[in-house]
Amino acid sequence: MTLDLQQHLIRQMVFSKATFGPGARTNGVLDHIQKEIAEVRESVGTVKHIEEWTDLVILSLDGLTRAIWAGTEYSVPVDQAAAHAVRSITGKQSKNERRDWPDWRGMSPDKAIEHVRGNPEKAHLE
Image 1: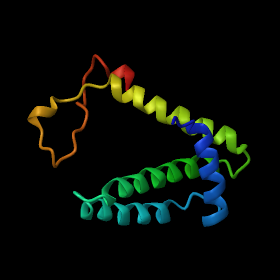
Image 2: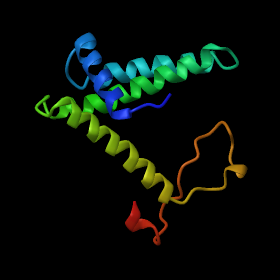
Image 3: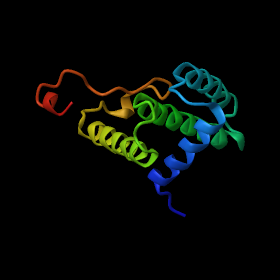
Image 4: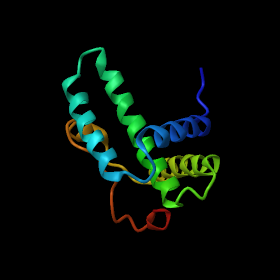
């Protein structure tokens, strides 16, 4: 099974607006994300672990699409807002791939690994 991300986002955006109302709802989405983060931590080593990570993905996509769609006061058609989200995701992935990253083998698995800042050779790519 493959996923057409743009079509999925359209489906999710229509459901979310109808179910949870219009607007960015930034604080509400972030509040829900914080609760799901706790559930991810609590579910390590159980069958629920994947489901909790999935909830985080869905909530993050909801936050992203709400920021785009609500930011245009819904004047942009849902398919264009979804396309914008897809471009944002793929663009950010490309940006991350161009960045310098420290060797993960020397990093703690319990701490975030952040890109190397201040590389003048790649500054124009940031």
